[in-house]
Length: 203
Image 1 (cartoon, rainbow, N blue to C red):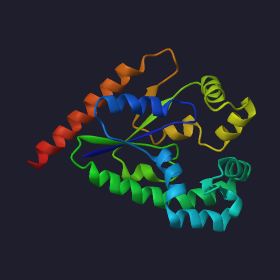
Image 2: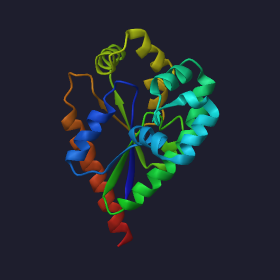
Image 3: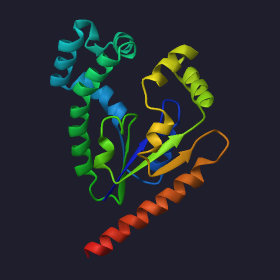
Image 4: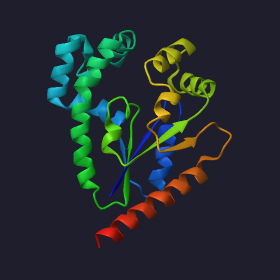
């Protein structure tokens, strides 16, 4: 089975691309979404977050996203610490999911921090979804109902597209002008062929 990662900056449209892959019956692991779920359901993870950020990190047994966002996006060391707490738990969850989908031709892991956490080293290929910065800013402002500066602050905590491109094997341009479906179908064909070649070699 071939393991593919999909990443990109905030507002690039990673999830949109993954949803199209899902319509092609490709299993997709949404790492960032699973992280949010695990941060509320995994007892040891909840305990570790409270130990680091205090009781205010949770409200009515739910993650206090507003408090945590303010805490980490204004302090890179706190953001780094949160990632160090959360990512090992997500990695373990991801491994379990991979095992459940081991018969697929290829799987996709969608995550914003594939390169930053070193996850790309466990993947066979990485796809970078790219879009102009202004397009991304407008998308996030509309999606999250936040102001321009808040989006820019989030972007400043992520690697740039130029930095991420050094680790990417393929890119999908999602600028609202180029059609993304033909780009996805082309990659789908490549990965299915590579998977078939691997099976033929093992036979």
